Image (tube, rainbow, N blue to C red; front, top):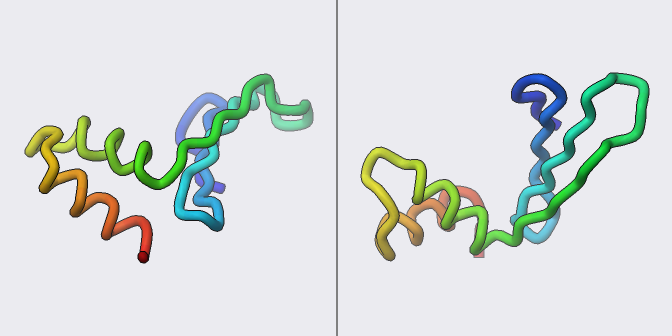
Length: 68
């Protein structure tokens, strides 16, 4: 898992999606967990990219992250 900051962890899951866990304290269970499927994650990446969200940028993000 990738620890981003302040207890936010990101992990790629087998279907190409991403699991996000919020675990404020190291030795406690996560307080929240959410999973994004590959299409949704690609949309998130495209939306925050410098080029902005478009069908083309979404497709590039999907191809980069999820092999189909």
